[in-house]
Image 1 (cartoon, rainbow, N blue to C red):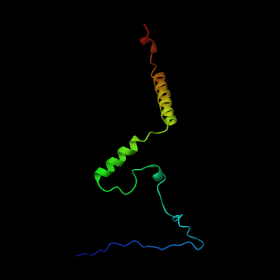
Image 2: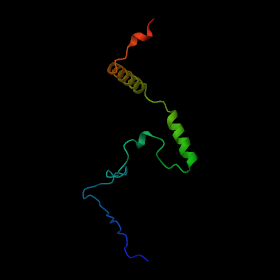
Image 3: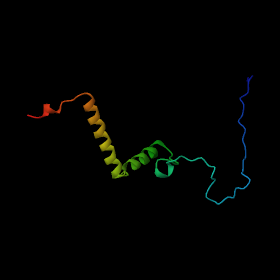
Image 4: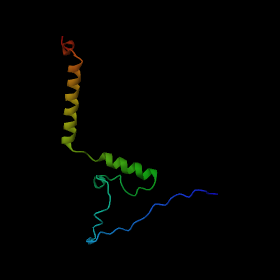
Length: 94
């Protein structure tokens, strides 16, 4: 027995006045920014298929410049941290 019914959302069939369909899809469609770069997005049925596509996505080698830039940033942040805590490097010399 329901005393309070849930309110249904209104659906609108909006078409712009001067829109011409080119066959490539609606320019008003909402898509994720990086979907065309990843293979893990799509119709993956089942848990096994999802894991296999993720594994394939990880096997793809990323850009070498990105890895180099990451290591440079990590090294600079490490040196800044060691400078802040006044780390003495002379303990490594004989």
